[in-house]
Every structure is written in structure tokens, then in C-alpha cells.
Amino acid sequence: MLRLAAIAVVLFGSVACNCSDAQPGSTGGGASAGSGGGGGSGGHAGAGGGTGGASMFSDFPVAPILDGVTVPFAADAGTASAPCVLEPEDGTLYPMDWLRPRFSFAAANGEDGFQVTLRAPNQVNPLVVFTSHPSWTMPQTMWGALTAHSVDVDFTLEVRAFKQAASAVSPVATSKFRIAPAAAAGAIVYWTTSNGTALKGFFLGAETVTTVLTPPAVPGSQCIGCHTSSPDGLFAGFSSSSNSGNGDESGVAMAAVDGGAMTPAFLSAAGAQLLARKQQQAPTFSAGHWSAGDRVVVSNYNTGGNFELVWTDLEATSTDQGTGWGVLARNGDTGHPASPSFSHDGSKLVYVSSPTVTSGVTVYTTADLYTIPFANRAGGSATAVPGASDPNAVECYPSFSPDDALLTFARVPNGERSYDNPKAEVWVAPIAGATSHRVRANDPPACAMVTSPGITNSWPKWGPLKTTVGAKTYYWLTFSSKRAGARPQLYVAGVVVEGGTVTSTPAMYLWNQPGDEANHTPAWDLFQLPSIN
Image (cartoon, rainbow, N blue to C red; front, top):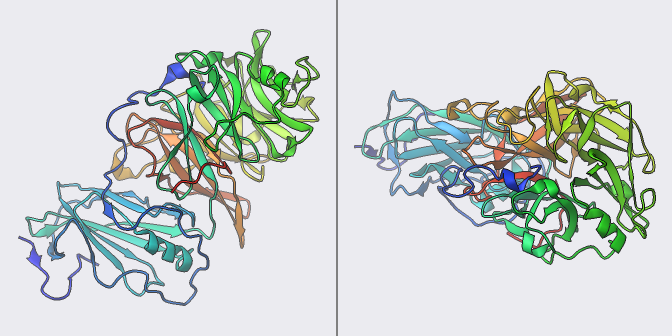
């Protein structure tokens, strides 16, 4: 038996967003790690600030926290394998407004207990937790104190596993992480294909999700899918189909995200009629064209048997081409377009060019990213993005960073389908640079025994905020992945630019999302969702 510690605790060691393309396994058990114990309740993490400098803080208790273990134990070191630390991955960078962290781990030898020790150089005491669960979630008050006192310092997490009916414990597994001197902000709205289609969402830092839109709230809709935010965060623009089994026939609709699902007051009858045209998908807006008299959406529309990038005047008084809508020129590009993304300043668009486009967001064979100027609704010369036009890859699903300096996109091998491809990975490239960066978040921990490519890392989108502190600029992106099982789940990663060099950090699992649902195609913006905790 493990020996009871007598007085002091002796610590161990030192579719086309397509309705017919619903993801496999969209019902049933969860894909996330065990829920485990923890203290505190939900809500937004404290914004905090400061690095703490030379000051020392006592944000961790002196006594161990017991979670499902009646007494702490002391034991001799054994020779078994160390547990696998699943969260946080080594090198994780948390935004200051992140969910209170969940530490999760997997025993290597059937152990039923874990000792978790967390150290920081500016904390007087280490945090020590004994738990019988495969995860432990930090109390909100503790996390708020750390975001106030321990920003931009190295935390070292140590985990050992033990059997409560034996005397040996495992070797230690370690993981390091930091809290960035930057928040991520905004809200994520994502598409779920479990039990029908719906858009659900949450503020970053909130511990629950809310249903934003369902087909019954949208006149004539049986399926809703690919979506984005209006620049003011009040509305979602999304694909809507009257056929629950086929999203390829979708038109575009708009509805408020505050729970009322109202259509915009500025949307004219002609504008609504133009949005509802069939085989029109992937709407995108720009803050540069979002004021009275200049409210524009760009979408991918099958006109005359070929997809084109088209603009639509949401306040149009006529449905005539050239007045209410028009085709954007892509001079020099002989391919067909898909998946447009409008720059925030309204000056240009990035899109996918491919010889084979089967819907507004699905391409086959070869595909590269191109940009065109918006040029007051005229378009212009198409230019291949240097870091996203590899002849050996299909680049797809592009998104502009909040300052329009970077692109994120998915890549699959040349000759393959872009949609729901297990080989998809997330990449980043400067809009004007020739070098692309494979995001570190593609790779789960090695001990998880799953690797990329093979886990469908796709649909990346930037967060709405960038923060510059000293020489570093912090960005955040979200994406979906099947690393936890057949159902896609949402993750977040940091991207840091310093001196022109792009680096990235491991993936962070959004543990507030339903693990038993298929969650993907996230949009991350300043959505004005109903208040949720």
C-alpha cells in the first residue's frame, strides 16, 4: 500500500458546408478527454496584466488540493512509463482571456491517480493537486490571479501517475506553457452537423455554448452552413438550402446573432432576392464597405454554368447586373474561383483558383490562392499568393488576419479534394511574402499516438485581435480537427511575428464545446451574441 504522509506531504519526485456531407459519428459519446475535477465556476477569464517582474506572489495554496483522493500519499519512485500530458501541450501559449485551463493526461500503466505539480518562478509555492480523474480544471479565481501576476513567465507542469493500492509511482512527465501578454477577444460561431445543422457559439472564456441559428429560424431553410460575421458583429451571413440533404443548391441568407434571428433592416427586397439565388455560397464582408450606401457582400455564384466571384449591393433598388450585383474581374486567372475572403480594409480579396470547382467551397485536383483588387466593384488583375501557390499542394479556405498582413489556409496534397480531407493541415503565409509556415498546432502530443497528416486539420480562421508588445505581435487562429476521434472539434493556437519571422504554438482544446457533437467551420469575430457564461 502507499504510505500515508505523516505530517508534511512528501511530493513525488521534484460542405461545401454541405448538408449531405455531415461528418461521420455525429451522434454518440464524446471525443474530448475526461472531465475530471476542479474548482470554481465559469465566466470570462480575468484580463489581468503585467509580468510580475521581481515580485513574488502566493496565488497557489500551501496545502495540496485533493480531488477524488481522500488523503495525499507519499511513495517510492517506480520504473513504469510516465503518463501522457494531453493538455497543455509543451510550448502552449494561452491568451489572457482563455478558459480556465484544464490539465488532462492519460495513464500509461492503468494507474488510477495523478499528482499534478505546477511551478512558476514568481510564485512562492508550487500548486500541488492529487486527483483520481484524468483531468483537472483550475479554479477561476486562481486563473484570474495568474493572468494578473504571472503573464509571460514560464510555467512548468509535472505529472506523475500512481495506483492507490500500490506503492510505486511513475516517472514524471513535464510540459511548459506561458500566458501571453495579449488577449484574443471576440466570439466563435461554428457549424455543427449533429442532430441536423445549426450554428452555435460562445465568447472566448465562456464555459458554455449557445445556439445561434437553426434552419426553422430562417424562412424556407432546411439546412444552414458556411458562415461569417458582418463587420459590426450583429449579423451572420450564411449558406441556406431548402434541401436538408444537399447544400450545393444553397443561397445566402443573413440573420441577427442576438437570439432573435431578425434580418437586417437595411437589406432591401432586391438585395434579399439577389442573396437567395441558388448555387451561391461563401459570403464574405469587409469593414471597408460597411456603411450606409456601401453595404456589400462578395460570394461565389454559379452564373452561366461557371462559378464567379460576385458582389451584391445589400441596399440595391434593382436586381439588374451592374446595378444590384456584378462579376469581379480576375484578369489573368484561367481557373474557377471558390472560398473568397474580403480584406478588412476593403481593398482586395483572396480566393481559391482551381480548374475543378464543384461548389462554392469545394475544389479538386489543383488549387492555389490568388488575390484581386476590389477596385470599386470592378476587380482587376489576379495575382498568385507567393507563399500559397505550391504546385504540389491544394491550398484552400483562406482567411485574412485582422491587420490583413497574414493569411491562414488549409493545404491538402495535389490532386485531392479540399473538403473533409484527412490529410488537410493548417498553414500561415505573409500576404506579400514567399515563405509559408506550417502551423505547429497541426501536431498533437507524440504520446497521443495520432499524427498529422491524417486528422483533418482544416477550416482555419483568424481571431479578431492582434496585439503588439515590444518586438512581438500576437495573433490567434482557430480550426477544426479530428485528432480526438471521428467528430471534428475546435482548437485555438497562437501565431507570433517577431522581426519578420513567423512562429506558432501548439493547439489548445476548447473544452467548453460539446464533445459528443461534430463541430467545425468556425468563424471568429466580434459577434454580438447573447450574454452567456
